[in-house]
Length: 185
Image (tube, rainbow, N blue to C red):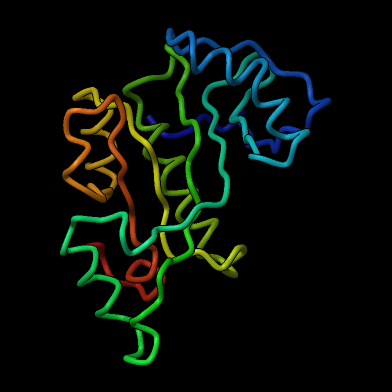
């Protein structure tokens, strides 16, 4: 099921009323209802809500990030970066990224492709007119099978293999091939 026609995406400001939301994860619910306000006030992250007249269907927050050369044990990432960079730029110590800080779909709307459609929106949003000069999207994904699977199905790869036993796995998506009309490898 695609995003319902009566839903709209709203950038939440600190004083924007939050419509009811429950994804059955207390940390994600608390972030949406409380922490997103503080993050916005302190210029740390911007939160967007997909909402209809009565409730919030999903939300995500984004913030600036970077991938530093020393952050990765993934030689495929290094090949991705080097493949498209001019030879003179291959020594960069970091590459610009935007991080998805929080991403959640309300319990009543899970498994309806809303998460994938929002992920496609995020990718397109940062490619369209290159709003922040970012090359990658990163996420610290909860190291839970269905969460990792969701990001992998949406083209994300592990940045490193060193965090396989950690609570969160750092994953990335390279926007450059997509910006050129190529499918992600």
